[in-house]
Amino acid sequence: MGKLAKIFILFVLVIICSPFLVDAHVKWFTKVTPEKEAIELILSPIFMTLTLLIAALLAVLTQLLPILDNIPITKKIDVILDRYRKASRYILKYGTALALMIQVWSGTIFAPEFAISNNIIRILLWLTILLLLIPNHYATKAGAIILFGLFIYQLAHSGLFHMLDYGFYLAIVGVLLVGRTKLEDWGFPFLYLGTGLSLCWVAVEKWVFPAMSIDIIHHHAVPTFGFAPSIFVVLAAFIEFVVGYLLIVGILNRLLAFVLTLIFISTTMLFGVTEIIGHLMIHIVLIIFIIEGVSFTIRLLKFIEQKFLKWSLFF
Image (cartoon, rainbow, N blue to C red; front, side, top):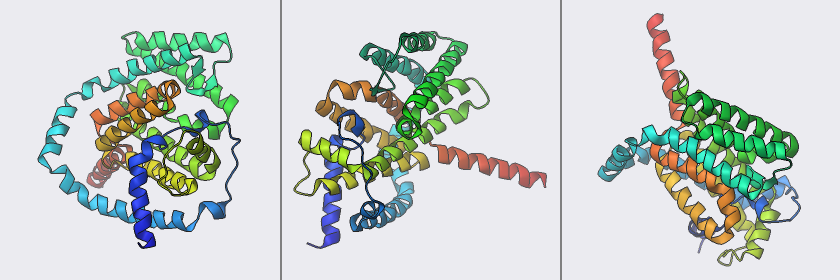
């Protein structure tokens, strides 16, 4: 069997088994001290080979999109899901309140690794939850502002690079703030952008700090099909990075959200309550993605096109 064929088979196997590692925040499940991998080890032959293969796959995928979009069942599903778009903001609003409520009960904020340090933070979290539960858009905006303040507080304590994992919370704040304003249509596209970038960053962390993921593989008996755990981690990170990238550029958004939802459900069976606490907010976001099916890039391109047409008519 050729080397490329072996790599392709491994890539497929990792996709099948990715629920055990992909999209898992490794910092939640290991106590290994993060150690940066040398850049020459990160940019290994398998890394470069996979980069080229995935680039080619994405190029082909863009050509297949028109065909996939014209499949009758795809059109039917899109029509059905489009009917529920009006509920998206309510799902995000009350879903965020639910996720924060569970975090408070567990004594954490934003993620299982961040413990609530004092009663002021606890009170502000409950105030945010209360404001989000009030069916009034001014109360929603007030809750979003407090949530933003809490994020900045945690950012100051944990550092920028640590909080990039949870950048989607800033996108959630943005969606809640622009509701019933002229910028309302930009809310969910930015949620795609924030979530996609968060996934990409978590993938990069797996490449840069592979020891943590390898420790999880050993301690949780994650199957690697006879391949080295280090290679398995590289492939899992590639899948996560590609998913994040596709969410940003707007390719197969609904399908990706559905697949990610199944992945998170699978990781819940492996990692238990910690996974539920940490990823409930992501589950809610993915439900919205399944309903919406839009993206930041497509919205941005349409905006540029409209502005260009206006300018061309003016001149």
